[in-house]
Amino acid sequence: MGIDQLDGRLLVLLAEEPRIGVLEASRRLGVARGTVQARLDRLQSNGVIRGFGPQVDPAALGYPVTAFATLQIRQGQGTDVRAHLATVPEVLELHTTTGSGDMLCRLVARSNADLQRVIDRVVGFDGIVRAATAIVMENPVPLRIIPLVKQASEDQA
Amino acid sequence: MGIDQLDGRLLVLLAEEPRIGVLEASRRLGVARGTVQARLDRLQSNGVIRGFGPQVDPAALGYPVTAFATLQIRQGQGTDVRAHLATVPEVLELHTTTGSGDMLCRLVARSNADLQRVIDRVVGFDGIVRAATAIVMENPVPLRIIPLVKQASEDQA
DNA sequence: GTATTCACTGGACAATGTGTGCAGCGACCG
DNA sequence: CGGTCGCTGCACACATTGTCCAGTGAATAC
Image (cartoon, rainbow over all chains, first blue to last red; front, side, top):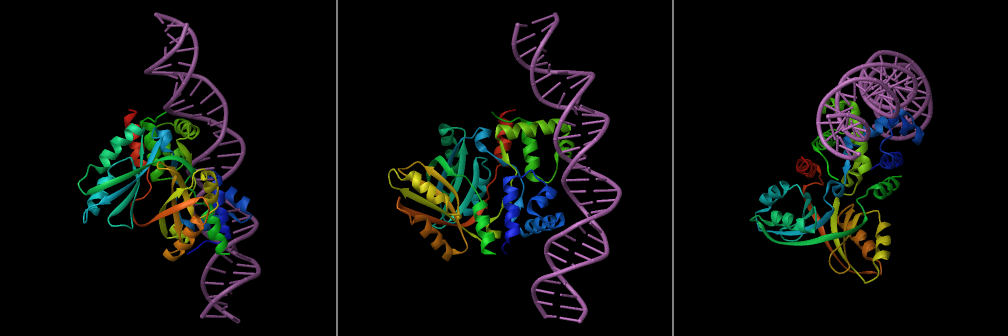
């Protein structure tokens, strides 16, 4: 477990310019093409790289409002609540957290008014005792991984 | 703004099998290659597709612990706090939310013990009044976008 | 009603990149 | 000291890309 500096540079390079291929990457990194291919294969089978799926912006899809909801779940209803929330498209992500029967989920909606509809749908389920919602106003640090990759590859040095 | 069904199918296809190229995608979708290329270009300049960067798993990097921290910020210190948090690699994401001077951030750490170090570093800054942390235990719904894409493309139909 | 615009089709071309395999080489390990 | 491993540099056949084009149908503007 862990990545070395070459892995780190490769990940950073891919993150900054995803369109480049293996050959171009090998030129940039100053190593043989086979090496880059082997590293990529290893990173993928390692699970370090989960995939190269498109990163879609919900706002551009017409869902500019993001919110986080903390849900309190009735004892023993966890499984049902998960299944319920998985069926709601506007639930982008769901975590169970410390705290008795608590979950945290990320929601999006078409507008603040629409958020009400989404929340109603989310909490309109028997196992949910209480919900507290925080609407996101600004996103100073969008989901990122590069700094952590750099950190991890330097630790491994 | 908005995507049609072809856009939706293309996004789903790319999300499920990112390795396929434009040509293969056009075969799967039953349209001409030029069409797929044009759609892709449009989706990217639209901002619907932000990019195709690698999706890196923090756990595989040696950071298996995830937590969410709610921070209460002293009036007028927001900008400084943002700059501070941006320098911490373990801060993967930061949002300002409703609630007086509240922020929500996603953290990762090498272990529960290491989380203490991360939190200390995060809150060891003057503008932060109080921090409440919830450790993630399970992640029943990992960050996803496909259901929303399907929803959006059907709405547009 | 007619002209214009637009998106899609289907095809072509040169250039590039990919998947794959190979031999050689230095480093590390038992 | 032999074996294993990762990297290099190279080769080949094949597939894909970027780009351009003419033709067509549908929607839109005049």
